[in-house]
Image (cartoon, rainbow over all chains, first blue to last red):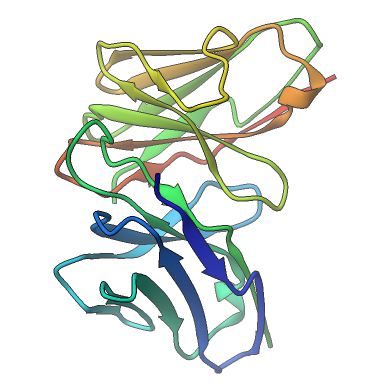
Length: 115
Length: 116
């Protein structure tokens, strides 16, 4: 089955700096890669996603890049703000079969943005 | 994005009793719902995949007789933890999407279960 590795486990930055979180996946058939933000005591919130036919996607201060050959994808947050502090999870899934879009999650990254 | 609700948001029960958690898609029809469990400072672990009108598919190591899942309609799935024990205390989260082609999964706010 799919295995997703996420690094770093914790990330501390100053407000205004950029933050980068990286994930690698093992199943070359995976073709959908979402990123979720989870605040304490809440469910994950989808912040951005990318499909395998695209190399990069950007939404304001957030961007995701995908390297299918190397099987890794990254989340980039620019001009970080204290409210960006949360746990971020990457995930991967594949189309077809009986997977029904089942997601495999990375281990999570605790991002702390210091004012 | 689509909205998924869960009820209750938290529950405390005594060991040996059963607890039911509801997951609803509020503004779309969810053909597939997923149930996850999350322990403190850990990632989400998929417990089972639930398709409307059919039996749930459980992940390896998850006891189907202990965690009963019912997906009776396109907007509602329920998870019942039977004969709960303290080790079942966890954060239970559901997610839903509207079809096999659409990949976006929308998550509920989670239910904190504490078994005393």
